[in-house]
Amino acid sequence: MHRLVNALVRRGLSVEVVGLGDPAGAPDGVAAVRAHPRAGLSRRLRDAVTLPWTAQGRVLVVIAPEMVPSAWLARRLRRRRLAVDVYEDYAKLAHDRPLGPVRRPAAVAVVRLATALSARADVTSVADAHVPPARARRRLVVRNLPDLTALPPPAAREPEPRAVYIGDVRRSRGLVTMLTALESAPEWSLDVVGPVAAPDQPWLDGWVASSAAASRLRLYGRLPPARAWRVATGAWIGLSLLDDTPAFREAVPSKLYEYAAVGLPSVATPLPRVVELLRDSGAGVVVADAAETAAEMRAFAADPERLDGLRERALAWAESLAAGGSPYDDWAAQVARLVEGVD
Image 1 (cartoon, rainbow, N blue to C red):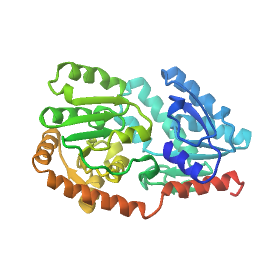
Image 2 (image 1 turned 135 degrees about the horizontal axis):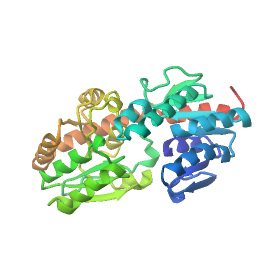
Image 3 (image 1 turned 30 degrees about the vertical axis):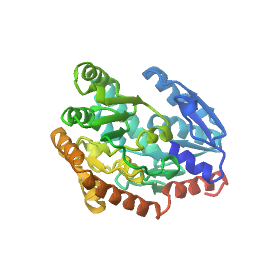
Image 4 (image 1 turned 120 degrees about the horizontal axis):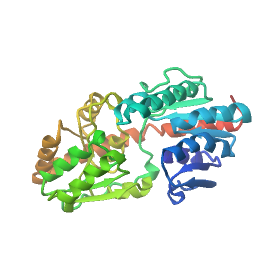
C-alpha cells in the first residue's frame, strides 16, 4: 500500500486512505486517512463489504482480495473506476495457510470471485508474470522492486553481527528456521519486524520463555515501512527463509530487493527463482535449513571481509535496478488516466 500511495502522490494525485490499522502509520502526503484497528473475522467481513462504499475518490484502488467484490459493485453502481493490485497468488496462498476445514473452502471461493472480478477492473496490476489473473482488461506487471523513498541510505555495518527479518512472521516464512539458527550462532543477534501470525504466537511465546538465545532476539511487531527499514540500518544480513510451498515456489520476495538497496546481503532458502537471482547478482547466499543458516552466520562472523564482498555486489545490483525507473510510477500513470477520464 505504501509503495502504491507514494507513487500516486508523486504523480500529483490526491489520495484518501481507507482501511485497517493505525492512522499514524499512513503514508506521507495523503489527503485523508480513515482507519480503525484490526479486529476479528466478523469485523473484517463487514469491512470487506462496507469500506469500498465509503471511499470518495474517482478511482477505487483495492489491494485486499476480500474487498474486490464490493468494490467492483461500487464501480458499477456509483460509476467509479477500479484499479486492483494483486500482489500474491492468493489461491495458492490459501492452501498454504492453516485455515481449517470450514474457512479454507470459504477463502478459496472468495479468492476465485476476486480473481475473476479483478480481471474486469479498469486496471489490474500483478506482482509477477505468473500471478493471476493471466488475462485482464488492462493488465500490468508491477514487480516488487523497492521504493527507495521509503528506505534509509546504506550504512556501515555495526561492530557486532546482527541479522534482520522484515515481513510477516509465521512458520512458512521462516520463523522456526531463523530462531533455530540463532540458537546455533551465539555471536549474532536478530531483529524481527512484522506481525506474528496468530497460530504461531504460542510457539514463539514458548521459545522466548525457554531458549537461551531469547536475549539476542528483538521483536518489533508491525511498523510503518520507513520505521521498519530503519531497524535494518547497521545490520549485517537480511533473512528470507521461505518454505518451499506452492505459493512461494515461483515467487521472488520483495525483501531481497529491499535488503540489497540498504546494503544487506540476503540469506535465503533455495526457491528456484531466488537461487537464480542470487546467483546472477551475487547479492547473497542460499541455505537449505536452519543448520546451514547458522553455519553461514558463524562463517560471516569469522570472516567479515567475505560479507563485505557480498554487500558490495548487493549494492551494485540494487543500483542497476533503480536505474530502470520505478514500475510503481508506470502504474500511477495508468491510474491518473482513469482519474482524468481517459480510458
